[in-house]
Image (cartoon, rainbow, N blue to C red; front, side):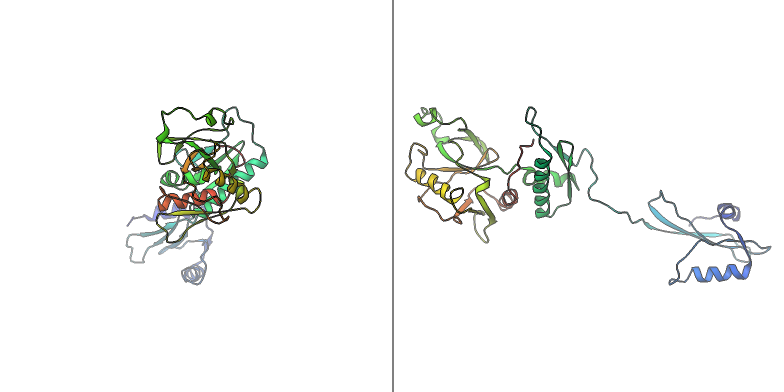
Length: 320
């Protein structure tokens, strides 16, 4: 416990308080120390005998509220100071941005400058994903970029993928797979459209697939859910009705089922942001729009991340 001299206490409050007579001083002390009565700054009391002080100090720049009570008995004993403190209540708008917990997303060099509407639409998708994951993070548009401030650096490592992924889903026919590596290129690959290409597998980048052009994209997906009590973990897709959804998917499914030149392997690749997620063998030429599922190679965590990424749509711009 800190020992304060009379001179220290007197100097502390002399300039801040006006003199008051002893009876009035005692009344104010009694009122101020009652729990139900709010305390307020008290004036100084001067007298030829003993002195008693109740001092309320508040420092705006400090991070704690400190109350000092000093008493001196008439017996001439030394003064005693008791200090009680508690952390100040501070308002917070979320994580504070710093180099260690902030991610900046912008368009690739040489890409067209994004419009304000594109940035706003992308921001809304990111905010929806953050809310779905139940994490503490703030996202905002900063010029031509989007910044995401996470509450902790380990949050960033764990959830940057599902939050910042572009969400560009594609359905592509498989022209050749890893087992076909080194074989002569089939004729249909040599004449494939420009957007055909080689894509790595999500869980093994050394495995690549030669895929045909995308026949269906994120806009065809109406709903994404995680199947309950299914092993292995499975993500279910409900495609939109009509020509821009299930009808187009069934056209591709029929070509793969028949192993036509468009889909010689009979397999269909589901690709997310340029990486192959799954390559199912097509066993029927016709599907109902709620029968599309992604399973195999997914853990429960990766399946949930995939649902979070897909259910709010893809970014209107490509960010890096």
